[in-house]
Length: 298
Image (cartoon, rainbow, N blue to C red; front, side):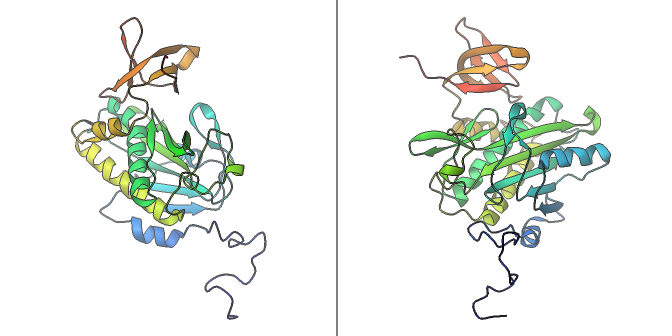
C-alpha cells in the first residue's frame, strides 16, 4: 500500500469505483448489521444493494413468492424506479439519500383498521431520528410527507409509502422510506423539494442517520403493537399531532375516483384518518388521498 492511499480502499478510484465520490461514501452494510440486528429486536435481516428499481417493489415481489420474516430490511444506494404516492417517481443521484423498505407483521393483536397508523408512525419515527441525529426539525404532512425549512420555504425532503400484502389473516405491510440527504439545489427533481443538506443538517453521513431511523421505527412500532394499535394509549397520536403541519390548516384532499374535499384539518382519528371540518359543518374523515395545503383566507 502506498503512503497516500486510504486504508481498505481499492487502488483505483475511477468512475466505476465505489469510492469515486468521496462526498457520498457507500453505506457500511456489515457495520449496520452489527449495530441493528439483534435476536431480541425487530430487525432480522438487512441487505444493501448498489442499485434497484424500487426497494418496495422488490420486497412486495418476495412476499408474493413466499414467506418473508418481519424485520427484513432492504436498502438501495440508488433507485431507478422509486415510487411515491399515486405512483409518482422518486429518483435521486446514487448515495445522495436513504432509500429503504422493510416488512412489518402487526399480527392479529392489532385490528386491521388501526394499520392506517403505520405510515404516520414511520413519519414520526423518522422525524424524531432526524431531529436527534441531524439537528433538523421536520414537520409531517398527512399522511406521508416529511417537510423541512429551506431558506424560509416549506420543502418536502422525504416520504413514506406503505403497501398491504396478503389476506387479512396473514397480512404483511411493506413500509418504504425515501429521504433526500445530500442533494444540492441543482440536483433537486422539482423546485418544491429539499434535502437535509439544504435544511442545514449538522452532518450528512448516512450510516448514523439510517441507524437512528431504524432504531426509532423499532421503538415506536413496539409501543404501538404492544398497545394493540391504540395510537392514543402509546403516545403516537400525541406525537403525531405535535409534529403535523397539516392540522389546523385549510386543505384540499384529492380523493380516489377523482373526487375532492376541502375544509380545515382538525384531527387525526383513532384509525389514522384525517378529519376535515367542511364549510357546511360536516366532519369528514379522509382515509386515503393526496392533501394540498391551502393558503388561509385573507
